[in-house]
Length: 81
Image 1 (cartoon, rainbow, N blue to C red):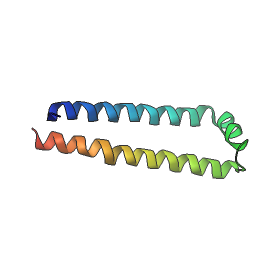
Image 2 (cartoon, rainbow, N blue to C red):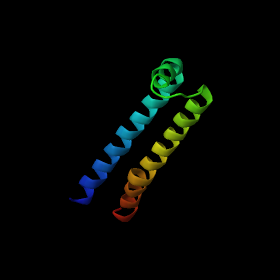
Image 3 (spheres, rainbow, N blue to C red):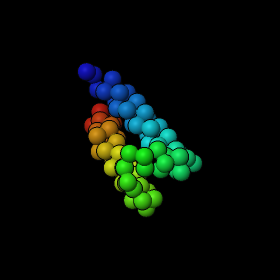
């Protein structure tokens, strides 16, 4: 795959993953009670542990996007410039 195509693919990956991350955050922010009720049907969770799990999930997802997509994209831009 040519470098320009790889850059484009990685850029789309970063964009799509950040859109998912923003959507997740907005649902967590504005539909917190509904989301908690949905998950508490399956698992016994306190509100505090639910918030912790969601916050940790957001953090891990964001770090994964940065490590696996954003950093290689930046490296390609630096090397192929």
